[in-house]
Image 1 (tube, rainbow, N blue to C red):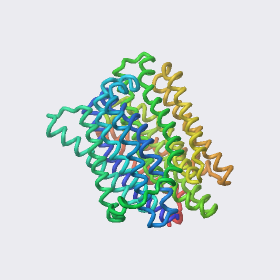
Image 2 (cartoon, one colour):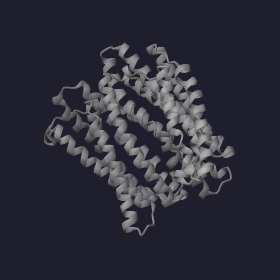
Image 3 (spheres, rainbow, N blue to C red):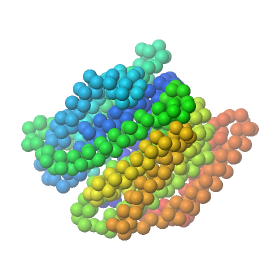
Image 4 (cartoon, rainbow, N blue to C red):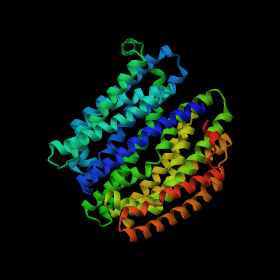
Length: 492
């Protein structure tokens, strides 16, 4: 299990890093071409996108990836057919509703009427995205992560390429939010066509079309998953939509509120989540792997995989947290030309360890079949964030919301860890993998920052502040190797 898990994780991580790097350049482009206010309006459509995705794709994709490993190969076409038809049965009505009721949703749900044209374009994406997700679920289930990995890169390249081409060739170097949403459609279409092509090389599309549909098992798993994810997505969407009005209530003008929302959700959070590409890739593949090991009663294998995954997630969280804590301000200013981005990045840096570990733990618990447990843990965490949005943000602005987000992640992470300690008898070395590495990394990056500032004062080149970061990373790697925080035997 470990070799397949490592190979798949590596493939998805490489793909994730490539797409995130492309995405960073794209977000820098959007923030400069749209401006903070328009970026905020663009970001407001994603709660709707996320809400719909949980209904027509998220639960179904996970169900397909879990069902496929336990079924004979001759049953795979029927499972795929059932998953695709189930996704279309949900996505097509959602597309129609969103297209014809975009004005009402924009005015009453998002509270920004300017999002209505964007929602109509977004409605066209749902069926395409649903089919793509089901096919990805199939390839995850057969441990062939290469296809979803290349699919991610294809989607990103076509999305970014389309928008930049329109910007320079047809828009006379003026940018609007509609072109950015059409870019989403272009990327999803390209990704879908690639997935269909690769699927046809594995299973005949003709055999899928004429196979006996096996929808019962997919429904049995997808309904509770989709219901849980829908509730969480609904609350998450409400949380996101409430942020600008609460900032306005705090005394900020609406343009500033939308700008801060755009910077937080469109710039800062993607930066915080960027190193989490590794843990996200791991979590996607952990679920079917843990599920299969649990079905075979391989408890030792489950414990070992869980402990290793969590320890490396902790180390990654410590590394990125201390990096953003010390370098957040210059990163925000040099990359995004925004002082607000730097300040928010520094405060959000404390999220990293809890966010990455929680992602891994959630996937392990779901793989054990305890989706209800993770649902209630996440529900409680979102409840904390919504309370902070409603009662703390109007008094302390965006910093009140970020504190609520940190508290929410700590509570969710601890809840997941306690559950696994009680049920799997796993133990995590927090002092070895969290406390001492955090202190060491903080000191190393602090020294690197001060040396970089001295070099800036000498050369008058602002990017020189990062000159000693590679040296700091080498020292951290040596620290991890010396204290055996990283062991090569874990990777083979």
